[in-house]
Image (cartoon, rainbow, N blue to C red):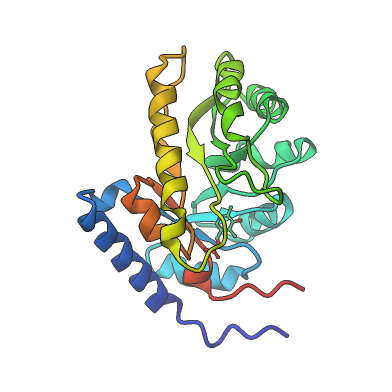
Length: 236
Ligand SMILES: *Cc1c(COP(=O)(O)O)cnc(C)c1O
């Protein structure tokens, strides 16, 4: 039996929102330009309901099955973001159920999302995941693959590439990740400046519990915070 009793979700949300606001003020940005995504993976629906009571309507999940099951249990309309590694055979569960897929890292996956969106007669918003630090253990496009990826998918009619996402290395001092966040922002600007048909990106999804303030200072428009809201995750 996992005990969640020691987590004060209302207080955690207030704290994260205050820090987001301060990071925005430090860097001359508007708090309304940064979306907080509450990453609820592994956490029960009861905790999601507590977030909703505290004004949160944007959630992130990383597994197709868990997302589908939570969707069925919650009657209130919410914005669900898919942030995990996505297999092509799971695309049908995600397209149409999510506001944004953050983790697209191959042309084949983008094509699978495009054809599922076509089937459902919708346009699906996606981000390209970039492995900025070149970590072996992480998914994502290598830095030097991003431009080719963008050009290759630019002709797909049922997806819209909205921006870039990264998961920075796990570090003790978040300052160590500043250069990666800065790199991703510059990459987005560079690619926008190439004026590729249908490509104009406006979303930078970067920053997690350990480093979201630095990410905001470097231009993040979406931060993905799990532990900072829900407490530690217990994997069984
Ligand atoms: C789990 C996860 C997060 C949240 O991580 P925390 O460190 O708990 O805030 C953010 N982004 C992705 C892609 C994740 O898988």
